[in-house]
Image 1 (cartoon, rainbow over the protein chains, first blue to last red):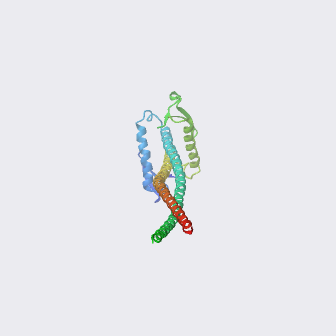
Image 2: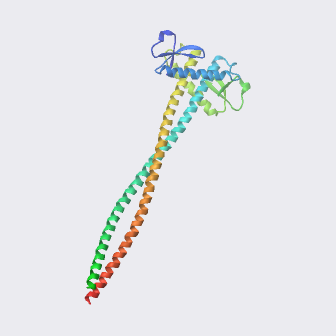
Length: 148
Length: 148
């Protein structure tokens, strides 16, 4: 949680001075100075946006502050919704990857089996070829004998 | 953007009455009543948390409001960081899916090629078998002739 220091007495090296709505204040937290400055300028930009809105100036300081709070919370809730959507999309992709890994293993296993089957058939094929050569040689020799 | 209505005069069917920090106020926006009530209770829960923190009570109303704003913005920035991480993870998964699709197509194409090759070899194998039967039949007939 970020806290606001009351005066210079609480100033430590973790504290960062920022300007919000033209007021200097010291934020205490474990975040980097750069991060806290980003938060300050995010709020300041929102104040600029609000000032262009009809009716904002007639709100009292308390209502202006509440309007700021509900609008930052609105941004937060919108990002949370986006986060949920992307989380679901990411989960969906995970199960797609899981299924594809399974399909890929299946296809590669089938390919390996086919290669083994092919190798066996080729061996048998070679045996048949040898047998044919043997039979044809035999036949040729017999014909020679027959002619003699 | 969410606005705060000034008094009952601006009450329309899009407006919703909420209670923030024990004060009734009317929020105008295009969001559902349920959504706006969730925002109100998120802020009210934060007020409860703050009240347990040393030093909060001695802050003036303006500083309390600013503390609320920077803490809601802190929540927002933290969720944004999460969103970025999950987005990167989701992008990484997308390229994994892309690569796996490619691998799967490659494996399936190779499998199809093997099947065609196998079919051809089997045909040739059958031809060789026929040739052997032919040669062996010839040899058998010749032997019968020889014996006679």
